[in-house]
Image (cartoon, rainbow, N blue to C red; front, side):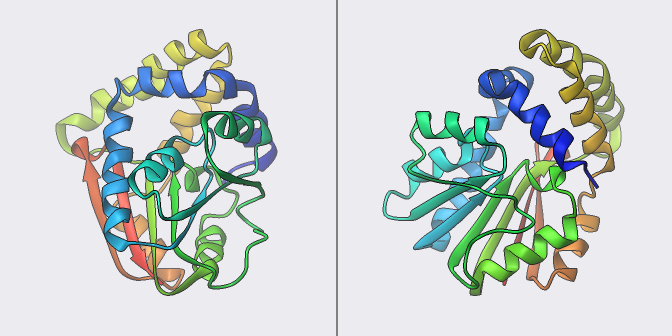
Length: 223
């Protein structure tokens, strides 16, 4: 699990360059991943949606565009990231820790979290908190990095630990945040292990959709 203070300080330090750095490091593929998430969530037709670990609002903004009639709230525990999200046009933001959220039980039709669960202090506890806020039959969607299998695994890990921190460190001035990113991806459960964790939190119909050979994955579950 993660150290919340380190994570908060790391994201605060890279907030001004976070969006541009992400696009460079992924060569723009992260935009396609978020569009895929918006496509899936749109099919659920949620009236109220909570985007946790919304950060600078990348996913919330894509979903606002795709679902203009949905009430979307973005929540994060790092205020400097939320300040950027607000400036970029995220309509509703709340600064709160995902481990103890100030939202009512069964208040949302969908909960999304992109590249955020991995950074939370207790993955199982965070998933249970997400389920608490979903109405019966509501949907959870998690987008996060994963480790590919097969021939892609070795070159990806080399990029993750050698190239990514160096480039990101040059762009942001905070290489330590991206050394942490590489370690956190290695430690984070993926594939069937993550599906099992989501199921243990009480979700049903849990599934995984690998993206780009398993570099990232989309997980879904129903409350």
